[in-house]
Image (tube, rainbow, N blue to C red; front, side):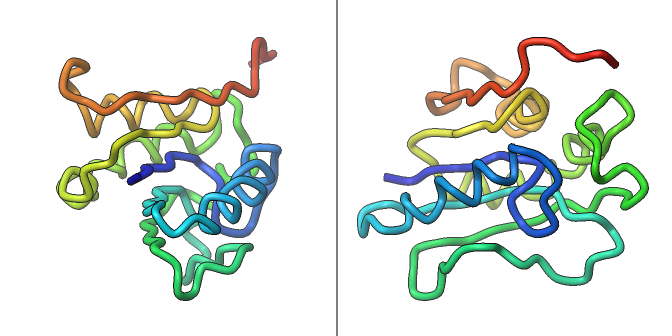
Length: 139
């Protein structure tokens, strides 16, 4: 099974439960030999290299990172880096479509924009599993 994982936080540094969830679930997926995982997450633009907080060497794991402003990093509010993540993911659209995921997992509300950017036609996209973290917010 091929899984596309969309999450603002996956590579270090984490700042919320979204990154903690990714750090917890992804290693479990990687234990199964029939799972191929493609992660597309954000990375602050002051970081030069993505560091993933789980062992993936020798596993069927690939990742791409969208550079977002470090000044907006540590926020999931309206002024956070979600818009840059959504806009930047288009660069990887062909690579994602060539991967042909069987399912897309989106962590929190900021995964919906990238999903729509990658798959503008809702009828031609894989099933989407949405992992909600917020029912309300103050911003």
